[in-house]
Image 1 (cartoon, rainbow, N blue to C red):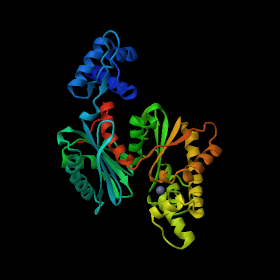
Image 2 (image 1 turned 90 degrees about the vertical axis):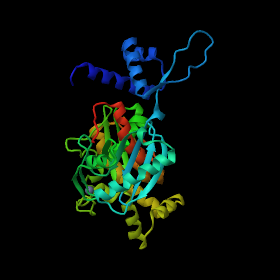
Image 3 (image 1 turned 120 degrees about the vertical axis):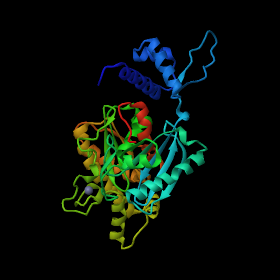
Length: 384
Ligand SMILES: [Zn+2]
């Protein structure tokens, strides 16, 4: 990193913004005290951030004597981010503020999973989302798109996405050209981890794992506050560790991957195999609510299998905590308890807590966080 004045200014901005994100509103004097910056430097940075409408002065709390210091807070409401989570049959779309609080959301149907088809579907939703929230296009700071697969967030390239049959696709650049807004992309589980790091359970942890179970299985690692992407953007692919040699065919083309033996499609197939009739995902969820023995036994098997592989990850990376998300969190303790039990049994030394943190908008909010995180991390630059 170059040690010039603009770099140190950017560093100070990031320092102050992240302090406010973690602590909430505090006074300039407190900022100086906590960061070790001089009061003059804090005043300068805060003035710059106010100019950019990134921070704002809040009301002072009425006191009995003397002047109360003015609390400064991030101006979460003044800017917008868009988040898109690409699925095979639909796109979860959300418009958020800088705290990734949803202001408008919709689900767009996907008729065509070609890159052009996806880009057109995304572009068509932007005006609708802005209209729903009654906001202007000029307020959008960026777009985040989460894609299942191997994604290089620094180049904006989708290296591969077996679910969509994409390879070496400059997705961020293509979308940015179409919509004229900066675009960031990442793998969907990494995006979930970023949102957890910024505003979720992960906010208080430097090292944690973000496990997602749904149509697939992934486990992103946040190490020293950053998502660990690995040397080929292929880190965290817990779902593609081989669980059953020569087992079921996985969407990646190989056989026996964990996700082919424990993710949601497997659960439904297993039901059909054991009963002779097919069941929808909603019906499966209802049968769990009704404590159906077969459904519970399928979840127990899947949970144990996931927990066993998760234990290996814990032995390698020793995270402080594991946050769980993904649609399958809806199945509750019937899935989570066997994961915990197996993790307990197979983890060697530390047994991190497994905490579920999931709402249906979490995928799309994670995607939006790919855009908002760049306000807190100046080193990344968007495509477009
Ligand atoms: Zn696989």
